[in-house]
Length: 357
Picture 1 (cartoon, one colour):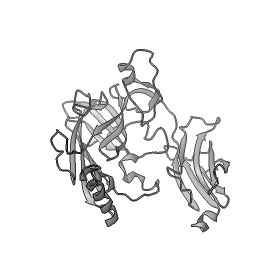
Picture 2 (cartoon, helix red, strand yellow):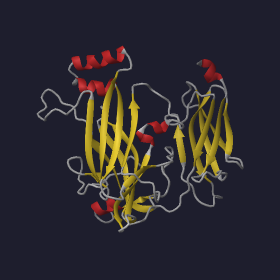
Picture 3 (cartoon, rainbow, N blue to C red):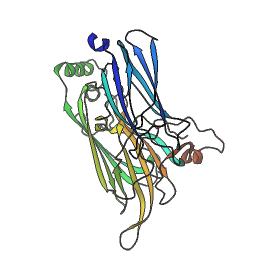
Picture 4 (spheres, helix red, strand yellow):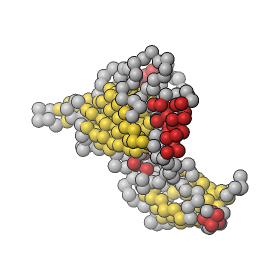
């Protein structure tokens, strides 16, 4: 391991815009930290060549820690900022990293209805719990949640939505433990009375989670975004596709207790690094063609909470019929404005902190 840290480091970047064209009018800023030397770092500033490529280098005993890419004043169109670090897609210890990155343009951000919401998936029963036991636990859990797209939230009892535009089904299946030590840790927690075995399995076990979307209105549907940029504020393409929507779609992922470095080539195996476009409230002509619809997007669905018992995502809805633009203006949340007095400052928004009173 010391030999790896003692080696010089290289990071090869290939930067493209959302259309796959080389980005040459951008500035690249890197920080490299010296191993076991708090506060000792060097800054590296580079520019991509005519092919949108560059190789940054750090000396021995240093590792890349943070990467930021911005457009320059000479950019014909402004870009969203790209940012990631060693908690994201940079490997501090890697001698050579090759990253293919997308730097999307800022085109036409518009006000949207937006909300970040959590929905309880699996509830764990305690000895004094007066509620009926959650079905299927400890080895299986399934929740069926109706979702109101216009209000960006689930219907009762999961939220305050009024009209069900689609259903989301969350299914979790226990696959066992990665080894005997992990199983012993889980059982010891339950034996000591810290919590029921359901919680222990949720914390220490390996699971397969499946997220299924089902639409009931003709013409409505969903499509998995072909692109996802987890290091950028605009994480999906600017517009919803005109066609390609299906009435049912499932996405599965495996959860275990093995720590892994995030990798841009494999990160989409997890729900969190995916997004979906939706077409809802469709109206059809006599030949079954969609003549009117509303478009929405789901960004970064993920299971959160100590026991991974809450499904959370960020939802964006365009209230203008037939407008497929879903590039969100973070200064204008129409759902916030509708639920708060005029002039109430909108709190700082990102994809994981969009709330209403």
